[in-house]
Amino acid sequence: MARKKKGLLIVVSGPAGVGKGTVNAALMQKHPEIRMSVSVTTRAPRPGEIEGVHYFFRTKEEFDRMIDEDAFLEYMHVFGMNYYGTPKAFVETERNKGNHVILEIDVQGAMKVKSRCPDAVLVFIAPPSLKVLKDRLVGRGTETQESIDVRTATALEELKKLPDYDYMVINDVVEEAVADMEAILSAELNRTARNQTLITKLTGGETI
Ligand code: 5GP
Image 1 (cartoon, rainbow, N blue to C red):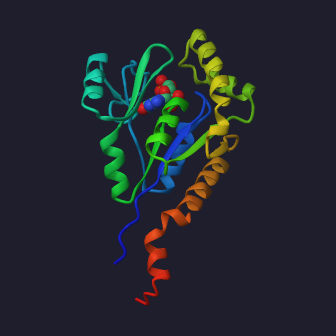
Image 2 (cartoon, rainbow, N blue to C red; image 1 turned 90 degrees about the vertical axis):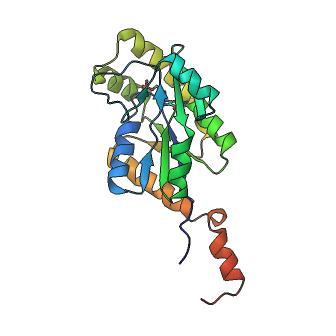
Image 3 (cartoon, helix red, strand yellow; image 1 turned 45 degrees about the vertical axis):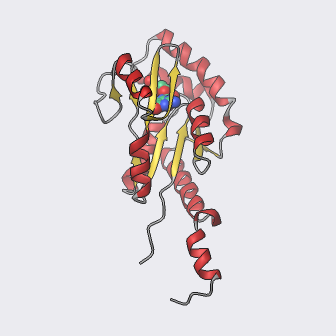
């Protein structure tokens, strides 16, 4: 029997409030072979956030220990206050099982992952306009005015990094954004570079 192919590593970035979480959750509901990496952070949980589901919430000291143990695929200091990091072990284990892993991380983290894992697929989720983005952030009701201002300014900087990504998906209608994500996954799985084993068999004249 053919060995299962290594799963895809999909990095999803986009400004706060763009709906990355909504798009990814809808995608995962349709595709049980997709896993979401849970990051470690030093920031305080927001109301409703669950340990081990949204993040692993850790102290700065615990985070530093994980850095020393080389436990992160990448980690980043975001918004001048908090640390965020992607645990390495989960990503490798799941990909080796043939599952696809999504990392929902910021643009700097995405670039680090791309340099460490050149086969990673980088997707940027963009808003249809800056106005829509700001309205969504205000509507969330969990952010202070200062936080909204910082995040809007950060969003502009992040949008400038869009050309460094492999794909952009506009999140206007969630179902359409999910369909775009599915199309990207499908195309990536059909890349010749990801099908070397089968290509070798076919070109080797094997008939079984
Ligand atoms: P939030 O505090 O709103 O949950 O996330 C703030 C930012 O940190 C978002 O842009 C989010 O994508 C990013 N982020 C979350 N986890 C990680 C991670 O493990 N690594 C990096 N580099 N960024 C992350």
